[in-house]
Image (cartoon, rainbow, N blue to C red):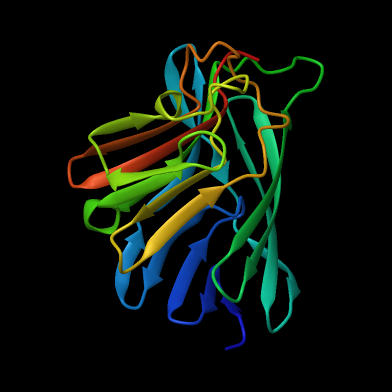
Length: 212
């Protein structure tokens, strides 16, 4: 099935993904079921959360097997530029550049977090690394953090993938490594977290979990 793009919605087989200019999913309809409720980037400044405002996505490239959209974001003294490729099977590759809105003044950020929210019924179970090639998979707990399962042989607590599923559908976040991330080497702050409450499951990944 050729990939379609119309007014910010990417259509692949059996799914419709609403994306914004930062390539974040504002909703996923998977076979008529709401699978992903929202995604956003949130900066913490002086203890207060500031959501990064995305632009509308602009179609940069279209082929039968994929589309690429581009856009920007702003907030908390930051400017962001994104290029996002959505492929025919629903795979999404995001390339995000973050910089101070005013290079001379810089930007003081305590934390920068990607928040992904799914209905609880879509994330009853999770799977992630237990260190190295081993994996941990179980019912999604009320709280989990990467400090619990990250490899003890590595610096920091980054885990390369988090998979949320109900056995019918699954959402997977993954990254090759944490190069360019600003995180605590001593694992004093969690890099990734899952919170299950209020009928939904939130997955947080902080690529900057200390001031910069």
